[in-house]
Every structure is written in structure tokens, then in C-alpha cells.
Image (cartoon, rainbow, N blue to C red; front, side):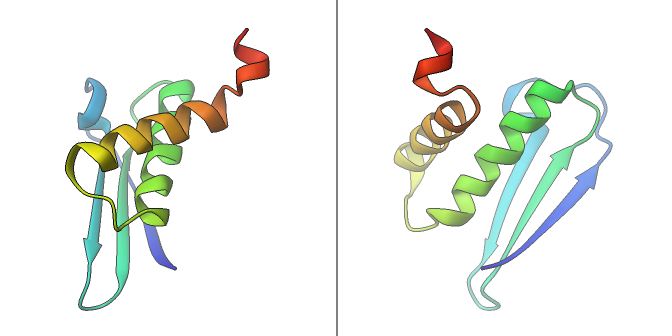
Length: 83
């Protein structure tokens, strides 16, 4: 996997405005832009969320978004700890 994480200072944002995933098929590279101007829990979520997009690049549209949400939630908050 050829992935680059780019930290950015976008200021205070809400939800999906805190991260962007870009896959460039011609070069086979993946770029993840992550807003540093967010609390640490949100930052960890978005980092994990974008990691999933890199690992499951074949998923598209709502399937990709739903899977990334579930992946991040499961990794950061395992079922055993969430109970």
C-alpha cells in the first residue's frame, strides 16, 4: 500500500469535513488529509476511518462509508469495552 497521511489545519469543522480520502489509480497512491484542529477522540476516529478507505478501496458509495464507520468504531471501541 502506498499511502500518505497529510496533517492539515482546517480549523473547527464538523463530521466528514475533518478528513478526506483520495485514491489516485494511475499512481496507485492513496492520500489521507486529516484535520489536526479537532479533539483527540475525533482525530483517532478519522485516522482509522481513512485507513479503512485505504484497505477497502474497492468498496464504493454508501457501502464504503458505512463500512469505514463500522471499522473505525469496532477498532476504537471493541464490543467488550462498549458494554
